[in-house]
Amino acid sequence: MFFHATLARSFINALSLRGDDDVIDRLNYYYTPIMLCIACLIISAKQYGGTPIECWVNPHSRESMEEYIESYCWIQNTYWVPMYENIPDDHTAREEKQIGYYQWVPFILIAEALMFSLPCMFWRLLSWQSGLNIQHLINVACDTNAIVDTADRQKAVDALASCFIDTLDLQSPNGDIPLRSMIAKIKCQRLLAGHYITCLYMLTKLFYTINIVVQFMLLNACLKSDEYLFFGFQVLQDLLAGKPWTESGHFPRVTLCDFEVRYLANLNRYTVQCALLINIINEKVFAFLWCWYLLLVIVTSFSTLSWLVNSLLQSEKIDYILKYMQIAQSSDRKKQMKFAKFQDSCAERVYSVIPFAPHLLDKFVIRFLKSDGVFILRMMANHAGDIVVVHVVKSLWQEFRERNWREFEEFEELKEMHFRQPKSAMVVGPPTLQQHRVVTIGNPVATIMNDSMNSEKGYL
Image 1 (tube, rainbow, N blue to C red):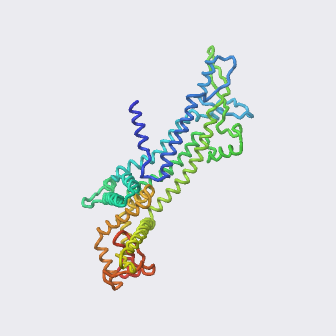
Image 2: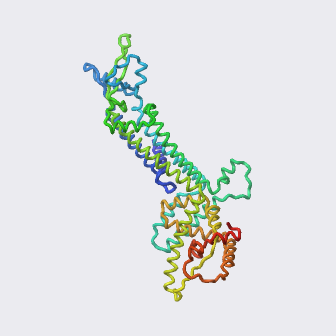
Image 3: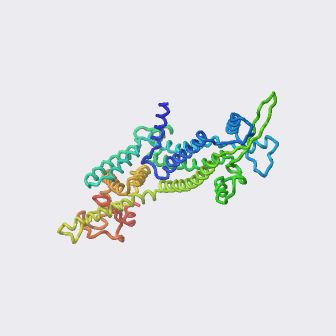
């Protein structure tokens, strides 16, 4: 008993809310299983704590006989025949009309809850084996966002950026030892270096969508509604139109049951009429679940498509990082202008700029951050907010600049030669859009030169 309790507790903890998913994922693996478990408890309380079925028997029958008939009909299945139709004499025809799902509804709901949890377990197991602790990064980012003091926040951002850089370095393959086997490359993550987590998450998203489609098929199979492609639509239409179950046959309340009794070496067959009280609850539960699954498959499909587009298109990844670089640019300019008010030469404010070509921005996103880095930043923005991501991107850019200082110096010389000005030249006021675009990340500030200038030196 202790083992089962520990196993259940571990399973619940494994499916607790974490920072390596989005709200659509939580609707699938967390909130939907909770609703299914609540529905299971309600139906189980009626089945095992109440009276799920009551049969009309001969008034002269003993109480023990009535209990036997009800128990037999509950476990042996019943069948539904409309009141305006005659009961068929052929027993095969009666078996074709049998209703055999009501005893298994709690188990069906539990199975559905487990199926909704499988994609989450797949994601957490394989992402953990990759060696990347995404949850830790997100938790640190959330803690950093809660810090009020500016100095303490900057220290926390530096620590977070350092941890982020270590994560990116871990994704970079070590090419000193060649691996011949394709399986070995997959195990060492060389085949998907920098893209492993992103591909794994996209696959998990697809599993969520496929799971919901399977849930629709499971409902139709369990409720024996193969004649309807969309069973929920038919049930809802009947409920809204006020069509009684006596006509539709969906979740019938009154059914028939056949049982046999041996008496004096003879086999006697009897037919009794039973009331399935549990079907009143089953109808409402399955109608709600069908509507919920319909909503869930729509939002999950849209979320999956959105993540696929944002993760596969390089332009989307570059634009996403550029957005935070522009926010950092605006913040730095405001700080510079505020600082200039306390200077004697505030009439002519100096903007310290170090240029970089678009190929440097592309290299920063595609070769330094890679898909996994952009993916973690997206998760960080979803849970910790954009402010923390802005500071992290600034720190990551400074690290990228230090690692590629030679390219930055070469392009700075190119810029000086193009504008015919020394390094210490002063640029009065912010650069205009006609001259070039500016992307400011911390200090120094980076400037993207125009395309004509880059084409002269072969950067574009």
